[in-house]
Each structure stands twice: as structure tokens, then as C-alpha cells.
Amino acid sequence: MALTALDLVTHPRFYECIREQSRMLLDMAAQNARHASVFSTQQRWLLAHLGLSLYFERTAANPTGGLINARFLELVQEFNIASRNTADSFMKEMIHYKAIRYVSDIKGKRMRPLEPSEITLAAVSGWLAVHLSVLDRLDGGGRIAVFAAQPETLLARVQPRIAHGLLSSKAVREPEDTFSLFTWLNNGGIVMDSLIAGISETDPEADQVPTDVQSVADLAGRLMLSRTHLTRKLRSAEAMGSIGWTGRRGQSIMWVSRAFRQEYANAQATKLAIIDEAFEAITGIKTAQPAALERAAG
Image (tube, rainbow, N blue to C red; front, side, top):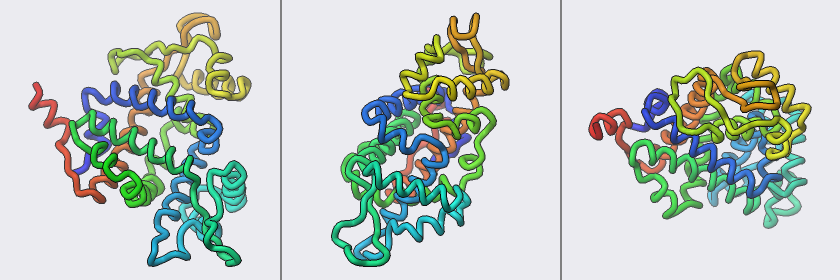
């Protein structure tokens, strides 16, 4: 069986692994900051996954299917991801920034399909590889080796199932308090990844854990965010008790709370479980449960 969110979040090494995951995702975002910013909110991330799933479902047997704007907007409404105007603006922005383009070999037709650019496909492939490698670290599985052997084929088959899992998950669509606070911030996911990546190895049960953030201005600069907007979100998180400062605000080290780390861990566990289920369903690869592995190792 694929790993469940509970299997993952209770694994003794889960916090260590998701810290490494956050670092890998930050490295990916830094390599193409403009492209990463296009998918910088939870809503945009879900819209992107929906669009990609439609593209991958275009086959030789169904060449007129795929990522067609009208069908995309219809499903956005069905899944209640965003308003029609917001989704339409998103598609236009994707075309403007060359994240997607019209399929060149189908011209003069009313319903012209779109396709992701090579850069977009490489980013999605890298995103999936990061998560498969984290799953492998948790249970000793061989997912990443299987994926590396045929990345284009498996990405096309696995991604639509991942997208459906994400769009159908209440935990993904309605994240917990602090996580939800950041999901509507431009690059909010990167902010949370940065806070988690900046934590050194520590007791997961500690109430407050210091990060490597000493200045909001520095964090905003690193992530190319508006300092004013980021400050407002951090103040809200501080009022919730999710973050704070070891001394005077802005002149000391920022800490993150155990509750916030748990929210982040729960969100990552849900996402990783969806990815693992999709990968196992498509490839047939089954891996050991982490609890069993830990008992055997002990």
C-alpha cells in the first residue's frame, strides 16, 4: 500500500526529511525565480495542476482534447478553485510569460489547445523528482530510480492523478490556520519553505525553534517580496503565536512555533501521500511502511 499522511507525519525522520525537501524546493525556485512566481499562491498552484492534467490527457486517440481554455474554465468552476475571470486572467498571464503556448500544428481551429513550455515541463518534472526522493528517504523505496528511467512518460501518466488527488483533498483545499494565512501571499509557499529550511536539527516537540531569519527586510529581499506585504502577514502570524522573535522584533532571531511546524508537516504529509498513491497506482511499485522499517532497524 502507498504511504498515508499518518504514516508520514508520525515517521521519526519526517521533520528532517521535509526540511531537506524545503531546501531543494527553494533551490529550484532560485534557479528560475520569475517562473516560480507565476505559481506563487495556493490558488495558482492548483490552477496550474489542473491545466497540466488537461494537457497530459491529450493523446493520439484524442488529439483535439487537452488544455483548451473553455474546458479549463469549466473545470475551474466545477472544482471551485477560482472565479472565471481570475482563471481566465491566469491563463492569459501564463501565455504572456511563455509558461504555456498554443500548439503550433493545430491552426485555424476554434478550439486551439495549449501546451506547457519546455521550461514548465522541466520545472514540474523537477518538482515531482524532489517529492519522490523524499518518499524514498523515508522508506528506502526506489521511486526516483524508476522515474529517472522514463521521466517524460511517467510524468504524463502520474501528474493527472496527482492533480485529481490535490483538487479533491479537503486538507489541501482548506489548510490549517497559519498555513492558510501564507497560501494567499505571493510566494507564500516559498516563505514557509524558507522558514522551515532555516531551522537546524532540533527536538520536534520544542515549543519554539529559532530560524536563520534576523530581518524581515532581508527575508523579503531574498524572496523578492514586498517588505510591507510580508511584514503584514508576519504580524498576523505573530498574533496567532505561530512566529515570534527571541528578542526585540527585527533585531533578533525569528522563531517558529511547534503548532506552525505541525501545520507545515501535516500539509506536506498530505501532499506526499497523494503523490505516493498516484505513483504506486501508475507504476505498481509498492514500498514498505515506515513504521515497520523503523521497528526492523531498531
